Image 1 (cartoon, helix red, strand yellow):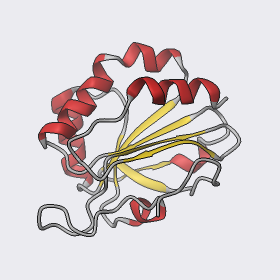
Image 2: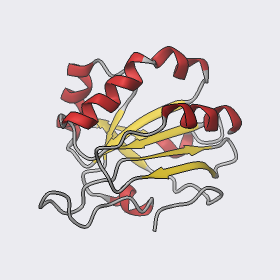
Image 3: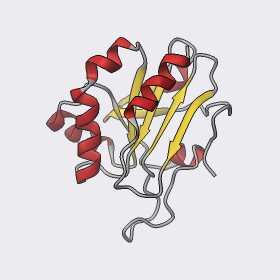
Image 4: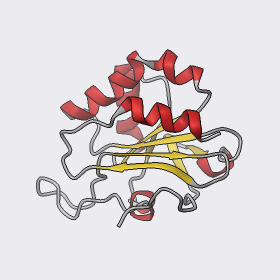
Length: 156
């Protein structure tokens, strides 16, 4: 079962690029945090999702939230994916699947692969609690970006 709205958000540190760890836990409390788990870099819907975020980045910037994409891809793959798609926020590597497991968003089996993150969105408020949670079993469905933005606006 995934983390639910109202639950205390698990704190974590993950690599944003090879050799560069980002402590997401230290950002909580300063401003809302958005976590966007996505199955696999360079897949069609994941590319569409990250590019949709990029294309609407001014709306996200106006909310003054920290946004992170998270996949089980290696930091090398995520860095290349971020670069090629000009993604304006960090893409973190949960290669060991610890954070996706803590948030309860791992597929048991995804097209023959085990331990791939489910497409999901979490907003963590400045109080450290999950203010919004959305998880889909259908990797072809993108998050409701407007609902996530509204949750961020309320999570201060």
